[in-house]
Length: 250
Ligand SMILES: NC(=O)c1ccc[n+]([C@@H]2O[C@H](COP(=O)([O-])OP(=O)(O)OC[C@H]3O[C@@H](n4cnc5c(N)ncnc54)[C@H](OP(=O)(O)O)[C@@H]3O)[C@@H](O)[C@H]2O)c1
Image (cartoon, rainbow, N blue to C red; front, side, top):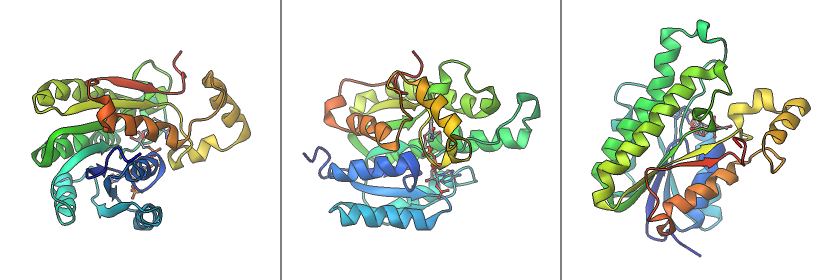
C-alpha cells in the first residue's frame, strides 16, 4: 500500500534514531524524503542509501539548527532537490545537559530553546510558503511535557512544551488550507540520545516496566504513528498531542 505516492516529505534529524525510522517509513509509503542532518553526514548517506536500496526515493540535506539563519539554510538546501513539500516532520532536537535545575546556565538554556523550539518554529514558517494545501505537519514532542518525570532536563521539557503550544495554535492558523498539525509524544526510545544510560540491564528493566506493554520503545513505534498522521487517514485529526509512550503515562 503506497499511501504517500507523489508526496514530498522533509524530516528534520531524519538521519538517525526516530527520524531515520520516520524517513524510512514515509519512503516505504511512496514519499520522496528529504533526510535532514546537522553533523553526521555518514548516517544521513546511509539512511538515503538504504531507502534507495528498498526501492524508495530520498536525498540528504545539511543545516545546523540552532544557529543564525538555520531555517533559511535548510530550505535553500531543500529547494535544490525538490519543488514544494507536502509533509514536514519537525523531529531534530537536543536533550541538552542533564543536571540539577540550579546548574542550568543561560547559554545551555538558549541553546536548547534555539534547537528544540525556535528552529522548528521558523522551519515551519518558511516551510508553509512551500507547502501544498492539504499538507501535514508533525512535531515530535515528548511524554515529559505531561507531568514532571525528569527535572534534570527541565529546559528540554520546557522547549517541547512550547512546541506543543505551537502545534495547537498553528493548527488553527493553517486549517483553512486543509493542513493538519499534530504532535507525537514518545516515551523513552532506544536511540543514541539515551544510549549512555539506557543500555545497562537495570535501566533497561526499569524503562520496560514503565509501559504496561512491558518493553522499551523502538524508533519504529513512533514512526508508524507519524505515518498515520502524514496520511489521508488522519484528515480529521488536527491540533492534537498524541501519546506514543506505550501507555507509560497511565
Ligand atoms: N529518544 C527518546 O527517548 C525520545 C523520547 C521523547 C522524545 N524524543 C524526541 O524524538 C526526536 C528524535 O530523538 P532521537 O532520540 O531519535 O534523537 P537522536 O538519535 O539523538 O538523533 C537526533 C537527530 O537530530 C539531528 N540533530 C540534532 N541536533 C541538531 C542540530 N542542532 N542541527 C541539526 N540537526 C540536529 C541529528 O543529526 P546529526 O547527528 O547530524 O547532528 C539526528 O539526525 C527528538 O525531537 C527528541 O526530543 C526522543
